[in-house]
Amino acid sequence: MKPNTDVTAIRRAEFPILQRSINGKPLVYLDNAATSQKPLSVIRALTDYYSYHHANVHRGTHSLSQEATDAFEQTRKATRDFIHAAQECEIIYTSGTTEGINLVAHGMSGSLQNGDEILLSLLEHHSNIVPWQLLAERIGALIRVIPINAKGELSVRDYEKLLSNRTKIVAVNHVSNALGTVNPVKELIRLAHGVGAKVLIDGAQAVPHIQVDVQDLDADFYAFSAHKMYGPTGLGILYGKERWLNEMPPYQSGGEMIDQVRFEKTSFAPLPFKFEAGTPHIAAVIAFRTALDFMRDVGMEVIREQEDMLLHYAAEQLAALPGMQIWGTAAQKASVLSFNLKGAHPFDVGSILDKMGIAVRTGHHCAQPLMKHYGIPGTVRASFAFYNTLDEVDALVAGIKRAREMLC
Ligand SMILES: *Cc1c(COP(=O)(O)O)cnc(C)c1O
Image 1 (tube, rainbow, N blue to C red):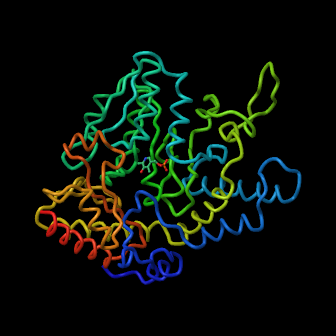
Image 2 (tube, helix red, strand yellow):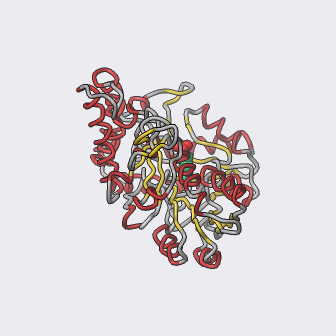
Image 3 (cartoon, protein in one colour):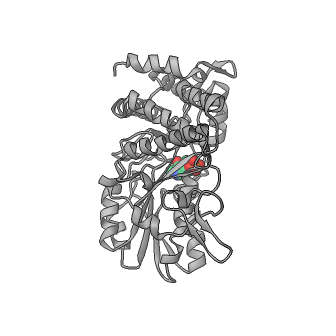
């Protein structure tokens, strides 16, 4: 467990927010699964764009607009490379994972019938439940739920039993935001394709932590958010196989997404523009490229190693404390530690930690069905980024001990 000097240097140089004090204590930011902090390079890319390069994209013949459009499209290329998509037109800019899933749920509605089935898992975020429920209600389709085992892992055997030729869509997360379980999505996708179902992967918690290759996974759709991977808020990416995206109707309509508009009939722009109505979040898109470069420069291996080290150290320390309940002990885990202090409400634990400068998330983590399954109101969740330190884990442990003295 040697501290990586490079990481320490990057933390100091790129994340001024991590030098802040909160409630008179050094900030210990352990809420990275909600959103990561932004490196100065990304912040500079935003101000640089607004200061010197701002113009609307895809419209002007003037040079400034061309410049903005070029930078906007460069990010698409960089994103394609980052997740190894086959083509740039398969990368759709959205406002976030939530919008990406809604876009697909909307677009798939024409290919479902009464009695068809949509498979979700017990681990899903509300964003990957509610859009499918609304779709199912509209169509008379059924939602079926893949159960989990005692460690918080999806039961592949039960999944296989649920799959049938009625299954039209499987929508599961790659990494659970509530437990950190890394799901065997490649296997899940292969099995779904065996019955002719399409698969949407909610990758919001995966892309920040592990190298994702959408072609290797053979995912039909893969959605994620820039703000959880060192990029700006208000931007997400939806990857979809070209063929499926071409078959789907537009989601929103208006400017940018049309080819020709007549009052009798409008024809739509080709991919990806068919799904990008209106003026997009240009600044976020352009700065997102810098976020991708940042992750490349740090290195996905370093990110993964560092986060694994923090996670294992924290899991060990917490498990040794009396009165701890740890939720989710999957063999494959990423970056998330969910726990409760027996006899204490998670909110109270979170409030005491906050007084000590420690930022964690408390509550149901947008995964109420999972909390109901465990019969708890919620958990305390510490989630790590590569820039966190072992000292910060020690601060968390000290904070939990303090909370126990006060609450239990
Ligand atoms: C954060 C998150 C979402 C929602 O992402 P938004 O950026 O809020 O749209 C969906 N699924 C998972 C697993 C998440 O962690």
